[in-house]
Every structure is written in C-alpha cells, then in structure tokens.
Length: 73
Image (cartoon, rainbow, N blue to C red; front, side, top):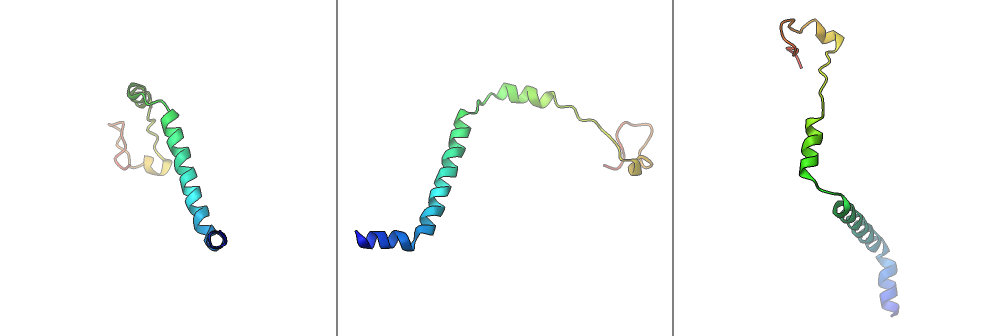
C-alpha cells in the first residue's frame, strides 16, 4: 500500500491532467447530448440572417455606381 501511495504522490500531476481531460470530455458530451438537433430549425435560422452590405468610406470611391456590390471587397 505504501508503494502505491508513493507512486500517486510522485505522479499526481499526470493524474490531475488526465482527470481534467476526462471531466471536460464528460461536460462536452453532456452538453452535446442535451442540445436539441433540429436541422429544419438550423436551416430557417440560416435563411433569416440578413447581410447588410456596407462599404467603408475609403472604399466608397472605388465602387461602381451601376451595381449594388462594390468592386473591391
């Protein structure tokens, strides 16, 4: 028993690192399993995202007035 305790005392850092990795993996697994996975909801969320095309004033001089998109992105 004394040799086992000496082994733990000499290598406590490795046990601590492995323990923390296992705890973080368990937390990640629990969060992933509890989070609902609805593909249709994700698609509607992606469709509802609007992208406002704003041009920086320094680039505004280089935009083409005939089109909505700037020539330089």
